[in-house]
Length: 472
Image 1 (spheres, rainbow, N blue to C red):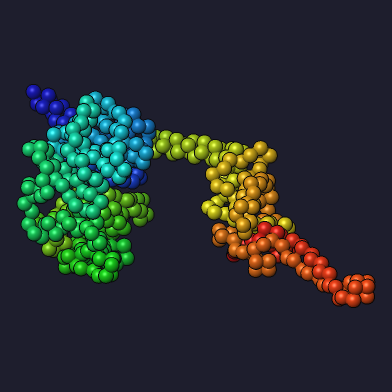
Image 2 (tube, rainbow, N blue to C red; image 1 turned 120 degrees about the horizontal axis):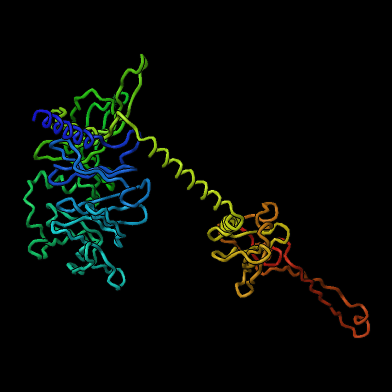
């Protein structure tokens, strides 16, 4: 019986150890999110997503992007989970995904919004079909069914009060609140009972800009060690800084090189951080460092370290996974380079450079002024579409020039400034000279003095006949 208990204990201990292995050493944790009244933490790295139980300092679950069907690695810019942590929304650079975690089932999510409500719905913004008018809908991610909860000009959405309230903000920063439980709209959040100080925090520090004020916090360093912190908000219009808390020192022995503020709680007098710091140790007599990332809580009054959870497993490194990712990245970069250097793409880049934005060119030989017409393809024979300009627009002409000639800086000079009228010919494109002479024969036969006038007209040598000169 004792043997059975011992074996069972070893199994449990082994399971607990495997659950607390953390993120792979040498990888960067990209995103963090506090859940369930700050009792849970989600961390996202390049290779995996981990849900932590902060009370027991253990991992509830760990999902690699590979097992979710997103490839060896994935760059996530946001995520959310539902109330029982069985569903997840994941946002990448290009696409969003809906994941059923128990089944490892993944599907594309066609909206930008990813926050769950308490009843496992997701509020999203959908174009109403009317110019600059957007509706708010609650979508069931499993079934795709949806109900409209707001038909105003919604600019952005938020989910608050443990998922029970949807906040809809307009362009003019006016808010409407939808209570998920009562299914009613109101102009005030009836569930919010925060203190005045905490409300001030909410308006300035909830990672949102409030009017013309921007929240900020200062770190004071001695070397790389953070010694003190101060919070406040900044008004750009008046260049005024208002300090929200007094300075206080962080009392720890860590050498911090980066800290991310997660949450500042005025009522609890606590500050929640993710810290990135270096651990110094001796390896065979040599001094070495390892980079650790920890979730920490400090006292807002004293700066004492109240809680710390290491998020990186420094004892091992998954070289196979990291090397596979590097190989995959090298292959992707090689394919992109090959595609970029393909002859047709090289020509496209050369054309794009010549076309520019309102790119006027001046032929130094003919002195003609041209506009390189944008968004036109390269024509057969490497010809580029131009407009030959004249001071009188009715004489503008459609012409073509070789790409190689336009790239010749000795032949063509470029300018983004609109050409101006030639001051030699006043924009006419030509110069007239008149000559007068007396006709002698008629002077004696008729007894009158006759004068003959001859006018010679030549193209203006200053503008080449177009009536325009470049502006530099």
